[in-house]
Image 1 (tube, helix red, strand yellow):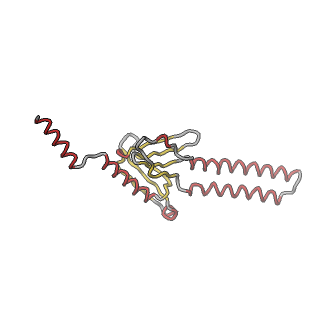
Image 2 (cartoon, one colour):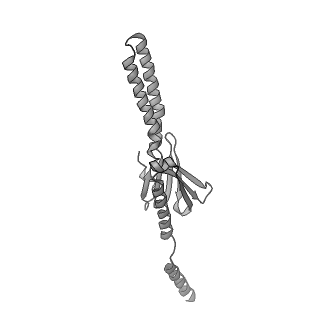
Image 3 (cartoon, one colour):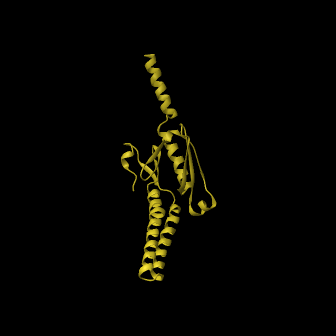
Length: 185
């Protein structure tokens, strides 16, 4: 499920598009494997006929329910969680049946920090905290893959945004010079 391009402005382009780290899918895969194993063991060891067929049907039904709730739903949830970094803003979106999206303009990013526990350092994920001016304050992005690189890229995006939208010394002198000329005329 790709992020819809129609939410971007005309001059905006995607720099990074991420989902949470793949470790979020470890338990769903374990549940899937155990569910399949339970059905196979039931099929192999339960007697065919009367009570064995009913027991196998119950095991199959429970396995299907476990797969739907503990495997399919977490996968869809993971797939519909987006961390999008553009040249203008950071978009955070999640939700399957309902959707929540937060836009943080780069002009409002005051601070950003990252943290990694030992497991995160070994597997390459961490938590990125973005502090912005406004009423919502901090946004915490959990399980960000390659969080150290993402934080560096965010720093570069914020700096590039500020450079594009601020006047340099030469531009400021030129504006003041033109103002003085028009005031003197």
